[in-house]
Length: 74
Image 1 (tube, rainbow, N blue to C red):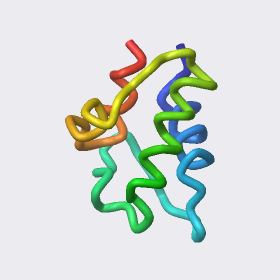
Image 2: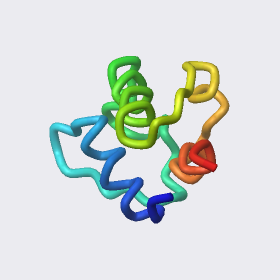
Image 3: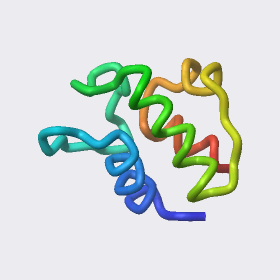
């Protein structure tokens, strides 16, 4: 399992922010400037391709922070 820092790097790549964004485990997804359906799809694909784990839109809706997303790997 990747560290939370490695996960955040993958997350930032998957979301493809236009401007650099400081993301920590406590960062709330809704507070991110580019968190939308396309970003959510990128995260779903990231989980599948990089971690071999299938998550759904409902899984994402239940996540408030980056740490919540990271827990889905467990």
